[in-house]
Length: 111
Length: 115
Image (cartoon, rainbow over all chains, first blue to last red; front, top):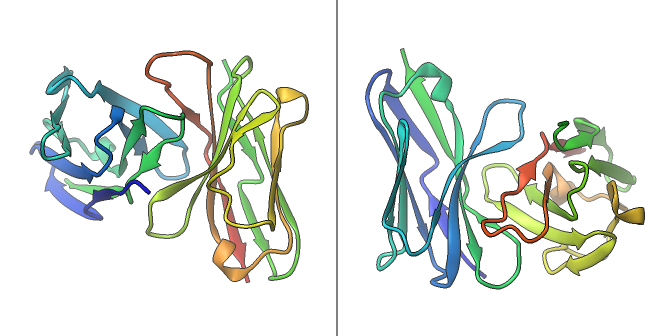
């Protein structure tokens, strides 16, 4: 099956930029997603990128996609304590509707 | 608009018992999905309903797991009998049909602990 990999933990200081990385194996992915899970809550869609795009920016969030290397990253500018959460990368292949998720990266923002 | 809701939020049961999880999707969403996250690992797909029909159940671990969606509204996921390795967080998600980027709205999850 498809593999989606992420590092498990990331710590940054408040005000710095955070970069969360993800690699995936399915080259037929149509869309790639970033979800955020805060404690006790469900997964919230942060942003998504279509596979024919290289970059997408949405306020403090920048998504970069390197399709050749199958590498996706999420950059959060001016990271705040409210950004502390688990961030999941997910891909959706051309066939079917199921998502393939990574393990999640737990982001801790230090005041 | 109410989001996806799941019940219970937490269940602690002994090995060999039966547990039934419930998911209420967003009203009008034809697609309903079940996922599971075992501690520290990735979120894994279990199955997908379109209305009341099982579209894809390739992720169901074994025949101890039974999912239903009677009437195409809420869904239940029953595990009988539970085993220790079934512990984890079970997420439900729903989405509208026929949208290009298929945003799935997730519930808060049910944390299942098997003793």
